[in-house]
Image (tube, rainbow, N blue to C red; front, side, top):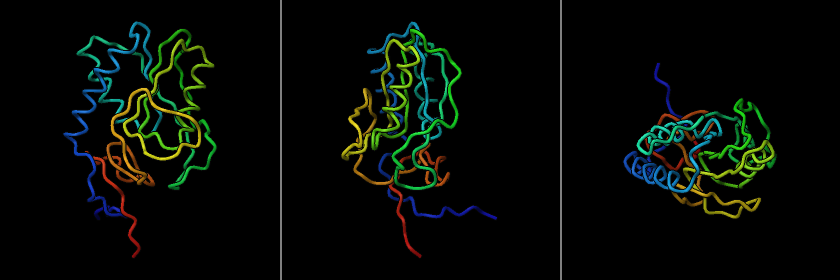
Length: 184
């Protein structure tokens, strides 16, 4: 039995080649702006895992050897609209005292999740916290938050692929596509 995707994903916004090229540029940006002696890269799960993996693999060409950990934060649940409250589902294990942190997330939308993570890691002793997102959604933020590094700016649409999901579908897509919610 084949697993059928519940919604069409044929509206591709960024191809796998577009993503690869932009990720390479972000690697160079991060390498030139971050102190890499005590670098910790923290991914916000689950959407960032593919993006983070590609970023840190590319750090090797700059001889950057970060410690890596993940935190699972949630403000959406199974829906498509943020609940407005960020909660920690799974916390990090790495010590952040005097570390230079790069927080990696899939998408900057309302700003709540990224701001929550940045503030949390500063409270835990990081000497600096920079943010890197794959997508920066053009919309009014719920909080004042801008990413230090952003891959692509997108309109206020729901997107999937390259780690981004809807109800845990579509993370495996090698591209980023606008999700079409057809009614049947």
